[in-house]
Length: 255
Image (cartoon, rainbow, N blue to C red; front, side, top):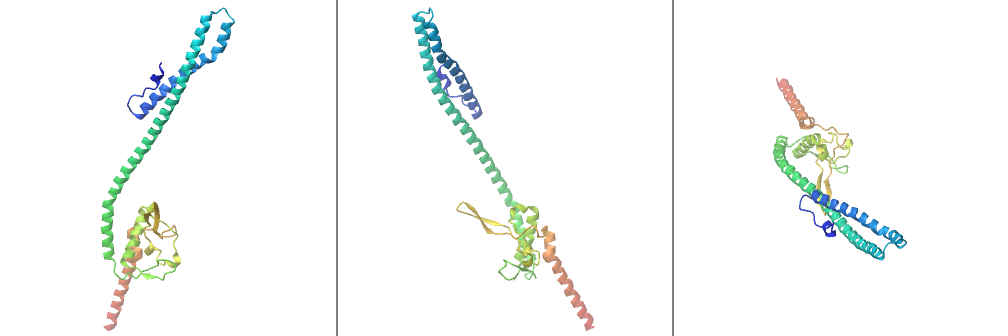
């Protein structure tokens, strides 16, 4: 087999097919290299035997000629092996990079699809949240703490609505939250009105925390109806009952 036949480029096809063809050529080349190398290595001993025998000078010349041709063949095979090995390594590297690139492309397509799928539920959530804020009275009778160095402030309808939403989202998908331990001494309402999503900004290639949530394992996390009932629904109903009871007592006294 000619050396150049080993170096023929593989037929076009899938990367795996081309790699297999290169591997096959390399195996054949190494097999011939082994047999030719044996000729070169055995030449000296055979020549000595012929010199000490009745072999003709012409036979010894032919032996030397065959050995010289074998050395040339061996040198060419060694160069061809280096070339084939390099081609094979490059083909394997390209195949590996192509496979990883395909995985990246598949992941990108899937993420793009799933991100678009979030738009509908997020828009619906935004509408429902706005309606929840509207339903909460301006005076919530709740207070919130921003941090331990700030005095308690009245909780607005937005604060309460965020707490209810935070509870509901945490129950459904806790992994989207940044969590810390509850600070019960500063959160008499169970840290509910302090609950907020962890938001990150992208700056100089880094994800940077913008604000940290205050949900922790010691906090009571509830679905939206339960959180709403504990935070404001039950207290409002209790105030309404108290007000009605007070009005009834005054009417009775006037009579």
